[in-house]
Length: 338
Figure 1 (cartoon, helix red, strand yellow):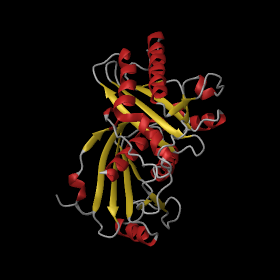
Figure 2 (tube, rainbow, N blue to C red; figure 1 turned 60 degrees about the vertical axis):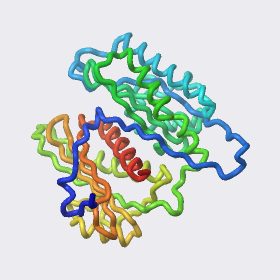
Figure 3 (cartoon, rainbow, N blue to C red; figure 1 turned 180 degrees about the vertical axis):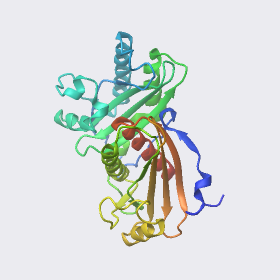
């Protein structure tokens, strides 16, 4: 199949329901080139208690109960047990952590602060687990691993549980670790996480945003902040994978999206910056809770689209935007591996 050009690629896209999508990618790892007979020291990993985020219709009037809390505890224990068994990790005790976000089960909303907490415990990496309740029978289980020193996202994986009860949460956590392969993430660190000299150079344009939701409340300031944070996280997390190098576009601040500059001009700027590829993105808020996000990676030389995704995600808050960013990073890296 021919690669779509920038002018015609829109018709080739397909929708991906973000909150129920499975981002199940095993990160390949570098083979050690040093002494093969010397086993590397295990990575010190701070595994924080699993947290529940509730997007269900009943969330406003049915708070988490003792059964939910017990299932979160069991999910955490199962994750820690399997990780310890791998032999690649040394678990770091997080029981004495006094951070407010950790104590209230809100690490998922603190912008990666779990990495800083883990660094204070002399850990190499942090891990949080998130159970997302979409309805009373539909759930998603996610884990995120960050480098404790830089805060960069090392790995994020997700699977969905349909027609299940909260008793299935620990099974979802077990499946992610056993089938997706969290133990392989350790090997990626042994091989180094810095971008290789021959990694492709990617420039990330600012995101175009439109809102036709008709909401009464003006959220333009929040959207502006989230857009800039989304772009910064994309650059950081893609570069941290070691598979992509970043190039900065020569644009005035807040005037470097396809809404302000024609696509051809953005591509010219990417070429001038030494980039081989350009990521062009646009968001469209269609209702109070639903947003569409369109991502195109364009070959700067041929002007052909080599990657495209149309993602829909539920929610317009910091958590929903961070989930969307993590998901599209994994999609891009998975495409690069293929």
